[in-house]
Amino acid sequence: MKMDTAGKRAVSFPVYTKEREGPHLIKRTVKNIAEMVKGTLTNPQYEQTVIHGVATDTRKLEQHQLFIPLKGEHFNGHTFVPQAFDAGVAAVLWDRSEPNPPENQAVILVDDTLSALQQLAKAYLQELGTRVIGVTGSNGKTTTKDMIHAVLGTRYRVHKTGGNFNNHIGLPLTVLAMPEDTEIAVLEMGMSAKGEIDLLSRLANPDAAVITNIGESHMQDLGSREGIAEAKLEIINGLKEDGVLIYIGDEPLLQKAYSCQTKTYGTGAQNDYQLQDVSQSEAGTHFTIKGMEKTFFIPILGKHNVMNAMAAIAAGAYFGITTEDAAKGLSGLKVTGMRLELIKTDSGISIINDAYNASPTSMKAAIQLTESLEGYGKKMLVLGDMLELGDLEETFHKECGAVISPEKIDRVFTYGKLGAFIAEGALKHFEKERVSHFTEKKDLLQAVKENASKGDLILFKASRGMKLEEIVKDLIESPLS
Image (cartoon, rainbow, N blue to C red; front, side, top):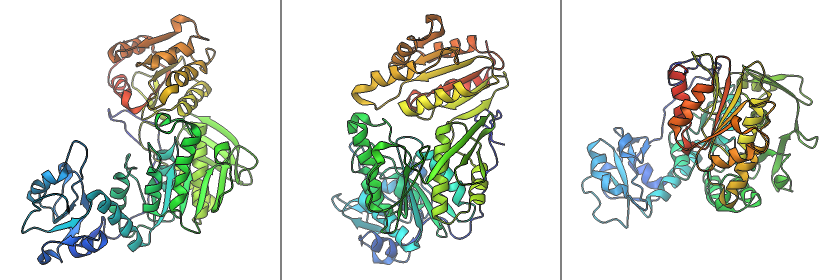
């Protein structure tokens, strides 16, 4: 049974795992590393020194690691190289443009330490021959990654992206933390601008690429949903020649001719995997797919998560996973926290904690889910700002408020500068006393406590920067007012 941070019971299920064998993390001699990054070892006497893993943060160093000092606009990791050696690292990379590399130490000179990190990960993947699935999309990347991992884990030794390590630094670090016996790596690929997915795809050279959906996240950088679709489709740029693109076939922006093989999923009859029936309970969601006799179950709520599960089933089938094993993997799914996590508190209220991130698409889906659940007292929404939406941010927030049904939701609480526009949209259909907006979290918490009773259901949804999980934690740990 899963426990939340306060030790209260959360609805979840055991995870099916496959025992792992073999060495963990990249383990190579310094000479090997220099060859892999096309660098120059300054002291040949260290050629046979063996490194165990890679780090870019001196706060997380372990002995025998390779330290890679990165440079940014306001920091320079080379400053911490002496500290890294004091901590017991075996070797470091050093940018040739930086003066005074350490003497009498295992130092590998490279043209650029970030590029070297990426090259090292690419070379490691190629040496191991590990097959790769790349996962991108505006929403649902992490959940879909978790689902693919669960499905493939019924047969293969699988490694997946941890946390949000899905960018130009995180993805290489994920690869370099991969056990050498890994058969398939499931790599999440995030982005905020064009060209970023292209880099990750060419680095990972995936056998299969998954696009979960095209939403509105990063609209401020990409200008339109069309621009977002173009950026997400960069994932096929590094796809192996015989690779497959798996995508949601209901999305018009993805309905085009591709030079690679494809598999689609969705509700429309044109899809290779067509959703048939869906039923939800507090424990999770059951669904069927046309042409498959099996009923699938996922211990997570939301029809949009059924779409994510169908992507995982399609990916599993490509790698030879049977329908029975796919169903077994999904039923034991464990997802990354704060994603439609249903929590029962000691006070008797139920909380849907979906505070990890938010976009208009995912917020509307979470609202619709809350409206559809039955068997509760009052149903309330706590909604906060959705970030990175560009010039249309006010419109998107108003639209989310306007879709809330006053027949199915009792109270709406909004928080943040942009949350005010959610409240404005909700007031088109709600009486004024049923909608409340807050700019201070303590006032919001107090209002929720005053209105909540045993048997009620409360949804928390906002972008990560709003930190609504702080209110969730307080509700779990303290009694109602």
